[in-house]
Structures are given as structure tokens and as C-alpha cells.
Image (cartoon, rainbow, N blue to C red; front, side, top):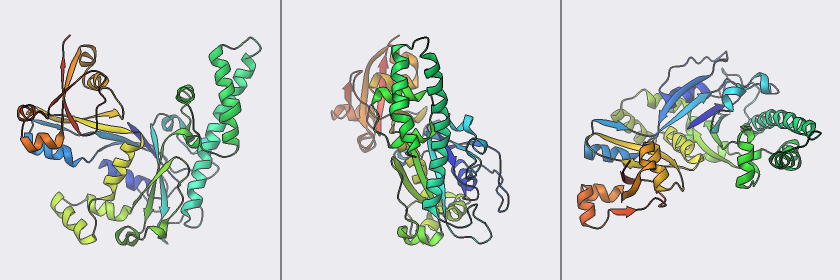
Length: 356
């Protein structure tokens, strides 16, 4: 899973990227990078930590999210200022929005206005999509002279009658209620305004610590989610060891680094869940989409499991920890045998039986 980090210059994008991925990319108060950065963040999961503590495995593998830090977008720059080729490959977008005042760091638009900045970036994504859709419609219209296939006619109708009008009305495509078939037809275009969107509001320290959310309140655009962070606090926390992090958070009145919520929100944005495999060799989280059947879930581990699937032995992670072993769970009838159509649930420990 990949999430593209976007935003205007000087909003804290690369600082956020560095903290999320434990990277050390250069940041500067006065200049803007033109470099695209890629890094990996671990999905924080207390359930998996407790399983690791119980099994003391040789190997521990949590779920991860890959973040792609795209250079700051210039208003009206569109294709010129966006790394479009790289951005189209990501699964979701995280738009970092500046809601903090800092006289030494000039805002590219002259003032701090989160709602305006959200609208600016949304419009740039829409304009980038508009160009692609217009070109595709023109090619289909040209091809109509020789005759279009049934699929091409359906695509032409979708683009000309629904997608293009929405873009011309400056509506992001994520706000449309599309059928599964329409979403499938659009998938190959990798349209930016159709991607799930997380707004990361970068606020002043007191807004985050004292919970004055109304000080940075903005209305999320259709189909988007919001999470608040304060990059200076998060950067300070990231440089502390685990014990001092806990004390620092307690002093601030925070339960956890807010960046944990950014990572989890990125994970949830695409409707993803984790199931676990456990043992002395490895405790591991596996990522699948919500509603994934057991057979396909096994395929994320190895294709042989999907091909030779017999059954899945399933238990809730809490029950496993309470009773101490899969054998004990089986004796208490808490270990279930499920078939290939069973839908794996978030947080379940699964052991697959297969034969190839």
C-alpha cells in the first residue's frame, strides 16, 4: 500500500514524511525541495505487540505503509509542479494542510488559510484529471468513425456523460457514487481526484495539546477524512526513546503520538484490515481488504495456500492471549474451523491448512 503526501510548499510535508518513515530528508525554512522521497512506516498495532511479547519469536513483522513525499505543489502549476507519474501509482493521498502561524516561514499564498489551501489542491487534482479525460474522450470520438467496441462505447458514455461534467463542475471524482463496474473502468486511468484522501491538518502545539480543534476547523471535502498533528511536537517525540516518549506524552496529556493516528488512518482509508500468524519462528501481520475470503487471505502468504486450501483455523487474538496457546483455545471450543468462503476479520489469528 502506498500513500502520496501532497500539499503546498512550506506546510510541513517533508517533516511529516521524515517522522513517519524515520527518514532524514533535508528540510529548509527558506527553500523548497524538488525531490520525490519514498519511505516505509510501520503500522502501530498494540495487539501484535502483545502477541510478540507472548511468543518471543525469532522474527517480528508488522504491517507497513509506504509513503511517497511529492514536492510542494505551486498554485496553477498542475502538471508542471506535480510528479504526476509517481503520484498516479499511489493508492491514496495524504494532503498536509498548514494551520500554524510561523512568521519566519512564509506561506506560499501569503497567509494561513486551511480551507483555501484544501480547495487549491483539490482543484489542481481536478485539472490534472480533466486533461486526461478530455484526451481519452477525443481518442474515442476519433475511433467512433471506424466503430467502437461495446466496452469502448460504455467507457465513452461514462467519461462524457458523468466524469467530464463532474470535473468541469470542479467536483472531485471521489465524491461521486460510482458503481463497481464504473470504478473498474476508471481504475486504469489512475485519476487523482478519485483516490481516497486524508487531510492532515498541521496545527500549533496548543491546538493539539489543549484540544482546541475549532481553532483549525475546516470542512472536509466529499469523500475525505481528517486527522490533526503538530509536526514540532511529533518531531520532538520521534527523537526520544520509548520510555521518555511515554513520559513526554503523559506530560502533554496525549495518549499516543498523533502520527500513529495518521498511519492507522492511512491504513483504514482503503478499507484494509490485519490478520495475524503466530509462532516461535515469527509473529506477523498480514494486510488484506475488508471482506476478503479465507482462501484469498491465505494467498497473501503464499500462492500454494490459496491453490491447495483445505481450511482455516481461526481464533480471536484476545482469546489466544487469555488461554496461552492454540491447543488450549481448541479445548475450550474457541478455535474455529472455517472454509474457503469465510470472511477474515480484523485482528484474528489464522492458521491455514493446505495441500499441494
